[in-house]
Amino acid sequence: MTTAALSCRDVRKQLSPCLIYMGSLGTKNEDKCCDGVRDLSTMARTPAAHQDACNCIKSEIGGLIRNRKDTDDKLNKMKSLAKDLPGKCGVNVPYEISDSTNCDE
Image (cartoon, rainbow, N blue to C red; front, side, top):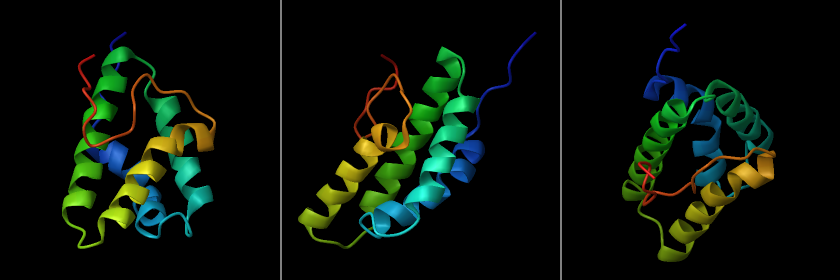
């Protein structure tokens, strides 16, 4: 049986509440964000799916950071919130959540 690849659309759908969470600097949508993180973790069962998710997350975080006109302190806080999401939401992922993660490792 072949498992379908995890699309960026799937990743965006699950993690859209996290964009609000990070954009609000952690004041909004934490529960919904964690629900999406846990759902995505369940969907990404294979190394290939983890790699697909990693690349999509990296792209989404990078886009969010690049498109913000915030101070460096706020951008660093958003990056920190993203990095801490797996632990906060009780999931393990085989990569760091960052706009600079090497998803091929």
